[in-house]
Image 1: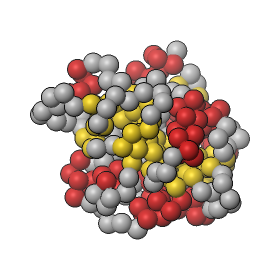
Image 2: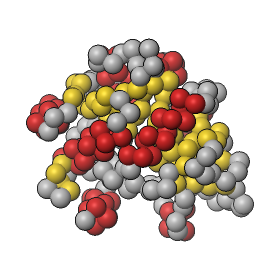
Image 3: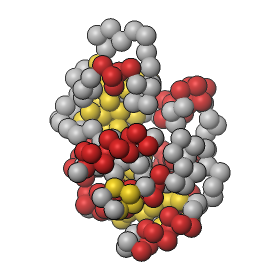
Image 4: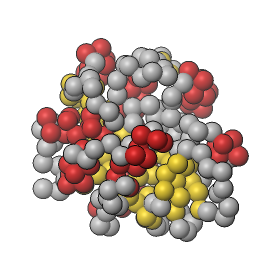
Length: 243
């Protein structure tokens, strides 16, 4: 059965910014902005995966569907998998992991990623945008990825590496990684059974678990760079942009 489900992993216990899913942007909790953007893409059903009853209540009050998960997952993808298996969408062949801290994600980027995953044989797909300044290159909170050639609207390229900082970029093709992942159901099932990898732990990047186990990741281009909210300073930036 060919269908897609978007699952948004989110929790209240983030160390750098506790309770951030409930932080208000234009008087609306951040998680509801993400939920609405996912719905706007209209690629499939949308679920929120969370261990927190408070998030569940707010999402349901705003017309969203929620799966309560265990609290002790080590990555968002592990939480997504639990929700996927518990849901009525457990027969979906494509699962999109949309981070709960990107309230200004562009729905067309989600649509394009889903199309590429349908048209090309790929285990995992993700998104990237152009790096706009040296500050982004130097900022360890901005995850970068490397590809072999220029990324554009029409290609879907193999990712060579993901990193936060680098001392020698030279003339490498580097882009700003956007933390959205599309998995085939088989790839997600394989991924969550793997042990955490060396580079996953060293770089604090869950996608390295896939890379180090020869699971192919490809990337599509996004014209927009959604702001991931990791700190209260990030929240101020996204409030300004969305205003």
